[in-house]
Length: 371
Image (cartoon, rainbow, N blue to C red; front, side):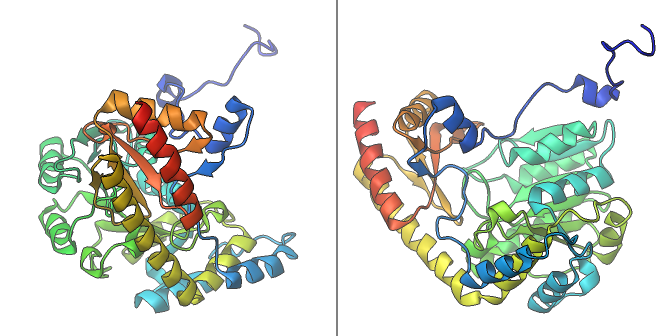
């Protein structure tokens, strides 16, 4: 083949060239395109159904006029506000392109070809997506009692010599939660050369005794949080990592400098200041979870107690779960089902507004009755 042959192609790395085509999530927009229609209920992506802070709307509207300027690459004002809120140093926080982007940075800084990584089977798939793209080897650990199995995660770390272990607490996709004391015990028992990535995307919806106390002295614990859930800013893509200053400094060697838009930083900063709005969202989600608990009794499908803004209904098996998701989609209702056993016996539904919950309940009752 000549150098000018138009049939040539890039010479991919061995890792990237060997990866299968995959998409962690099928987006609701893609579903709408395949259906050639509009979804009537969007309850599958764990987005907030309760909007965003009016203060954030105003701040983003003002910032939009300066979109011709890059955003502050240090996200200084937002980091400063977070540091005051959390009682930690400015150098213990980095702001990034949502938790997904931050997970990519964490993996890139620690994982290379052949490195073992431990995670729960079926948990947030984007983490594994980054690991395999870096040449790492994922060692999945089955759930126990519909929660990540902390003892089994630790055993797998020791057995494989893993450098990285991922835990979502509260968990996605189950919605379940471990107490902070149990997570602290996992942290203390980890080998010193293994780093825990603690995904706290849903921490605002959990009880205080489930949130690990803030401690940035440990160099092998990285916590990632987001403005996508309780703050309702999923489309703005703002997340932040909390870690030892050495790790935050290390990310500065290679992270994208201008990845968080000016308008997104302004919105997140304003939302952080609007505690009343966020507290209202948390209360609204709690009410929605109670409605879903009542619905589970009405349809005869148990639910997994949730510390998130979604609930899993046990519909009685993987085939029945698939059929339920498909039947709902035919009616314009977007939900999801967990991908790995034993949770794939369930359907997962975001807590919608009261109106959305009422509409969903009516449609689900009809679908369950027909199945």
